[in-house]
Image 1: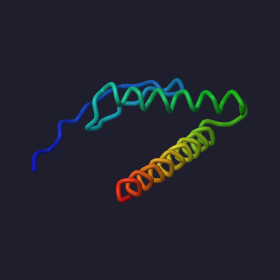
Image 2: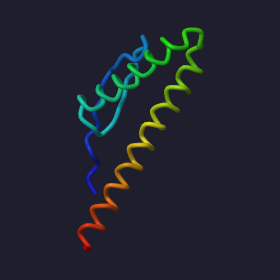
Image 3: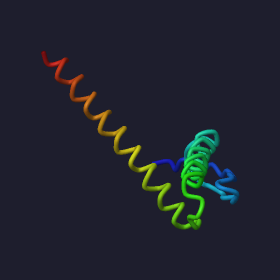
Image 4: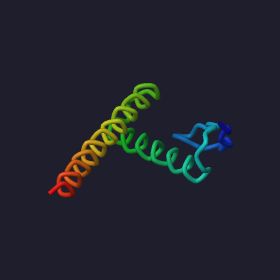
Amino acid sequence: MAEQQKTRVTVDIYGQQYTIVGTESSSHIRLVASIVDDKMREISEKNPTLDISKLAVLTAINIVHDYIKLKEEYDRLLQKLHKEKDE
C-alpha cells in the first residue's frame, strides 16, 4: 500500500508557532489551527486568569464537546435516512 504524502505547515496558535505534519492539505491544517486558535481566544476572553495549560485543556474539552454533538446529530440523521429508505 502506498504511503500518503505528508504535508508540513507552520501555524500560529495563541501566539505560539507549531509545525504540523499530516496527510491533509495545507489549507485544511491551517483551518484546524485557526479553529483551535479562535476557541482558545474565546475561552481566554471569558477566563483571563487561566494559565496556558488549563486554557489548552478547556479548549480541547470544548472542541471535543462540539465534535460529539455534531457526531450525534450526524448519526441521528443517518438513522433517519436509513429508516426513510426502508419505508
